Amino acid sequence: MLAKRIIPCLDIKNGRTVKGINFEGLRDAGDPVELAVSYAQQGADELVFLDINATNENRKTLTELVTRIAKQINIPFTVGGGINSIEDVSILLNAGADKVSINSAAIKEPTLLKKLTKQFGSQCIVLAIDTKFENDAWFVYLNGGRIKTNLRTPDWAKQAAELGVGEILLTSMNNDGTKKGFANTITQQISELVNIPVIASGGAGKIEHFRDAFNIGKADAVLAAGVFHFKEIEIQELKKYLKENKIEVRI
Amino acid sequence: MKTVILKYNSGNVRSVSFALERIGINAIVTDNEEEILSADKVILPGVGEASGAMMYLKEKKMDDLIRALNQPVLGICLGMQLFCRFSEEGNINCLGIFDQDVKLFSPGELKVPQIGWNTINELSTDLFKNVKENAYQYLVHSYYVELGANTIAQTNYGINYSTAIQKNNFYGVQFHPEKSGLIGQTILENFIKL
Figure 1 (cartoon, rainbow over the protein chains, first blue to last red):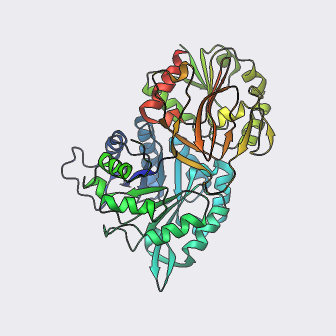
Figure 2 (figure 1 turned 180 degrees about the horizontal axis):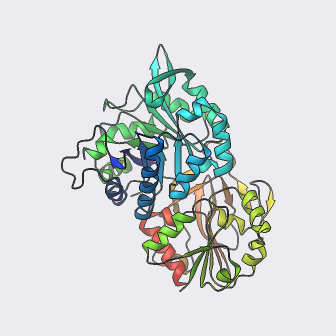
Figure 3 (figure 1 turned 90 degrees about the vertical axis):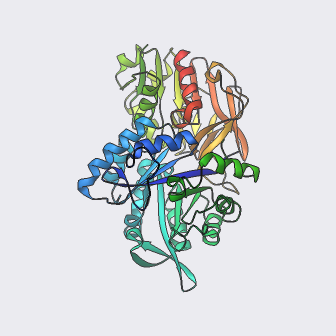
């Protein structure tokens, strides 16, 4: 049976791991490769690296980092952040990334998704959606959650699936950082609306939240950062708990 | 030991080459006929789209070359699908080494593509030496090969399908051993030792 996936996310700036992460207790504070290897050994099913300071100058640093990661880790990984052209995607995939995630660029030019999936295949194009619940509806946000659009999240998810993306990474801005659990209602709605895998993101605090994201949110995978970086949740214990709760995981 | 990774318009050549490096094999990535013919092992990686890949192989006259290989050959994912008779992805005739067809998962309750770790069962041949039944491997695909006489491993995703096939010196795996942790590494090592 296909297992549900647990995906730690690492935020990258200038080739180092950063952002709201307390590295106390970790030997090397900032090397993403070392963290990645450690997560792979602990049983992470995939990894996501988000370049939070994506600029043209930094692109070379990121590309070199992607190759270092690809050499070291033996599980799949996705790279995202500021990707807005076929060339960007080509460079990152050639550097060794298994998938890339696209966000703002796809909202500005939806046909980019079609071009990318045609050229590289659906399986390596992930659509990242930052969404916020306001006035009784879920809206899509641009530029790392800084700019609101009038797009409704279900409409955008459906359109992206039709344009060929292989997966949707859905981050609830209402839940992100709260540690109060995932946005299971919208996750479930999207998961049942599209016929591609949906990754739930934003809000992980306790192991029960992961169970709920799978059982209630119908997520195919769950992404989290802080709880893993802070070692509040150990991946192996989490998977043991999920298995006890009859959720198929790879142990 | 000379291992060659076939260079064609497929995505993840580097992933395979890095995975081999991790087990101490420095593979040559090439489309040079002499290099390929003189290799001890040949790997056809695969991420991409079937009809485009097949047209590229034909254009470069690599289709006849692959069919004629005598040494152990491993096709991964799309590489394996290209070994088959026909693919529904772009409705194209493939290399025809195996007489199975490649079909699209029929959308229903299950999501397509299948993405993630699934178990491999009914394992046979030395490719799976020291690999336990129900081991997890990483898969990402929308098209599958049906079960048949050449099936050497199967996986269930709504239906049971061939997750590995073998005929003479040709081996194909639907999963990605290069991305499947230590068990995937064992499978790659087993292939190199064939």
